[in-house]
Amino acid sequence: MDVYKTEEEQVQAIKTWWKDNAFSVIAGIVIGISVLVGYRYWTDLNQTKAQQASVLYNTILTEDNKSKNTELLKNEYSATPYAALATLLVAKDLVVANEYEKAEAQLLWAIENSHDDAVKHIAQQRLARIYLSQDKISEAENLVKGIKAVGFDAAYNDIRGDIYFEKKLFVQAKEHYRLALSALSQGDQRYTVIKMKLDDLAQNASTITSEDEKANVK
Image (cartoon, rainbow, N blue to C red; front, top):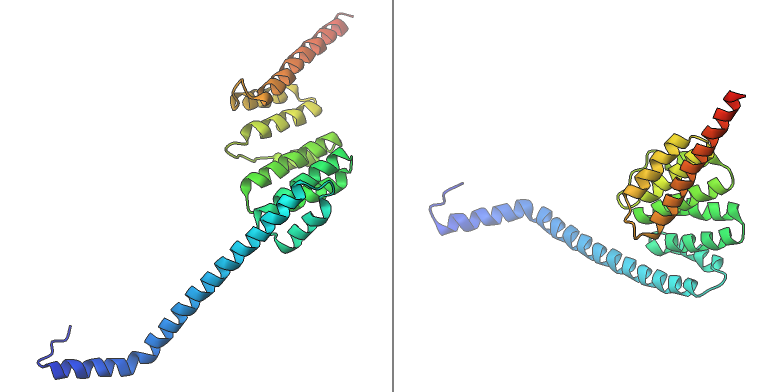
């Protein structure tokens, strides 16, 4: 640090420094203010869009035909969570109406565009169920392969159990049903359903074994 002998030398040094650096200082202040104003504008805009999307989503909840406003959400408010949530509702209605291809398109959109991991997992699981119902075993298997997600392990293992059952790989099916049960409490409704699958699988396996033994005796 420079040591100044008089106040005049210090004042003169400050003037010299300001002359050399004034533009940079002023530019930095202007840029800082611009960034702050831009951030505030961006935040306010996002909050406004989120509020508008929320109102539109609540309207969709009460509609019988949800498609029109869901498309509006997807086109105008895709960055909000409401767009993907609406596609789940539309896909559910389409499945009930047996319009599986349209339901698949909605769920794929949710998987590809949702910023919420939970919504993505739900969409993946529902799409895998659709594939299974159409005997598209490979598509269902590829969709859930290798996915690990806290809170969704039971659902994914249940689906994998169903896939292996359809492939007649009963040992693997039992393993995944057991994994699914281990992630659930006995009070969970899903526990009862999966337990029934596991019990039925054990019974079917015994029947198959008995028939094979009879065939060998003959």
